[in-house]
Amino acid sequence: MTPIASLSAGSSMRAAMEGRDIGAVADAFAADAEFHSPLTDRLTFRGRDQIAALAGIILEVFENFRYTDEFMGDEDGFLVGRARVDGLEIEFVDHLRFDGDGRIASITVFFRPLPAAAAALRQIGARLGRRESLLRGAAISVLAQPLALMTRIGDAIGAGLLRASVRS
Image (cartoon, rainbow, N blue to C red):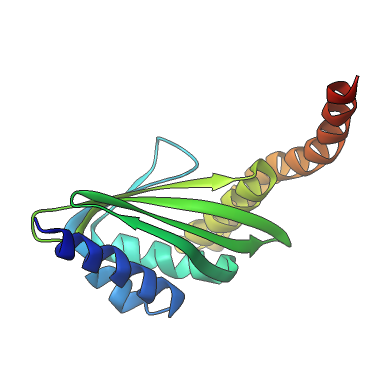
């Protein structure tokens, strides 16, 4: 694979996501590509159709979605970005691996900070569940709500306690 092929695939996905063009997002991926969840090892999305559906949900959930940095090599690359979810700022890194044809063969996503990641889990999970049924979406939202609440409260209190410990 040439560096130009990988640059094209990563940059194409970036432009498609920022342009909210789900068809172009799907086109950046190989037919058998895999999307590895940032939230669990138990969930991998496979193929362009599943990845396109997930990208659509991500763009619904994340407000002001934008990439801030791009690093591409011959075999893999990274896109770094920011957005807002449930009023919280979230940072993310998309680790892309390219196939021999220059398409994205796999993507693994990483989120921070934890309160925003928990909010993303709740919002994305509920919307994915709603594709099957309203009840499934509601169940996922209810199951994820305590984590989202605990991380918001824990972040506010814990950071204050840690700052006080560091000063002493």
